[in-house]
Length: 331
Figure 1 (tube, one colour):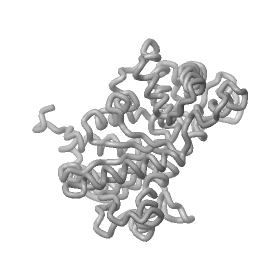
Figure 2 (tube, one colour; figure 1 turned 45 degrees about the horizontal axis):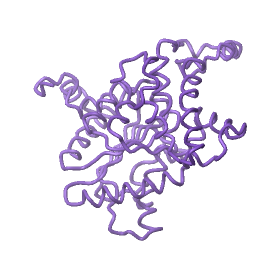
Figure 3 (spheres, rainbow, N blue to C red; figure 1 turned 180 degrees about the vertical axis):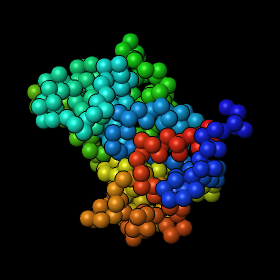
Figure 4 (tube, one colour; figure 1 turned 90 degrees about the horizontal axis):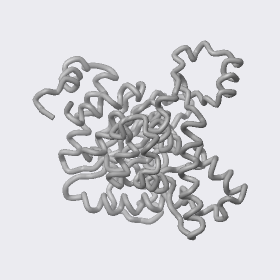
């Protein structure tokens, strides 16, 4: 790309001067500065960002090595692939605020699962992926092997199991980009997702004999502790690991805790804290909302340092994240 021609970046730099607009711009400049110093960026993905097609911008961030690891909800992990194979069957419902309970029931009868203004088709998306991944689950089960949820999805993507069903350019799938880069992914609470529900069902029906064929959240935390310790120690002289949080919930809460766990439970005091922090959130600090807590609260838990650059953008992540990514990519 011609770096002298940066229409998105130039527009934001000129127009985004105050309030959340200024916070967005400052966070993007901070992201770029963090990477320029030799740092790496850990991204967390909550909400329904894959159904919002975040892959259109996140995939390029992964390919350009602007994101080095991801903690995702199980929903975002699978919904990127649902969109990859069933995009043409999705239905938008722009008038979703006007739907009656009877309207919702009719969507259910058509097996159209609604996410705000978008309906995911059960048969073309969910069941198609279930069929492909069930073969991998059962093969691993028979062999006595154990893999993480994202590793099973990497397997079907790398084998090309689903290629004939692709309905979008695979360059716009962040999971395809992640599989190509073998990006570290951590998926706490995977059993809450559609595929996690399906896996539980197959364990109950005894299609899968060993429930531990798919590895657990505790094992993900152990793997994250190993990854963070290794990467943070390696980077100490040049940079640090940043934390870019989209939304709240378990995708953000789970990984940020790895630092106090390393310090307080394992007494690895030499491991540095997160070196950059940014959260895009529509939650507020009232009612004890951790997802909306200001970054300084994380200092008291040993997650961030006093000197850690901290940003919070109270806005819609489906608007904010692509703009920040565009600035980081110098578009």
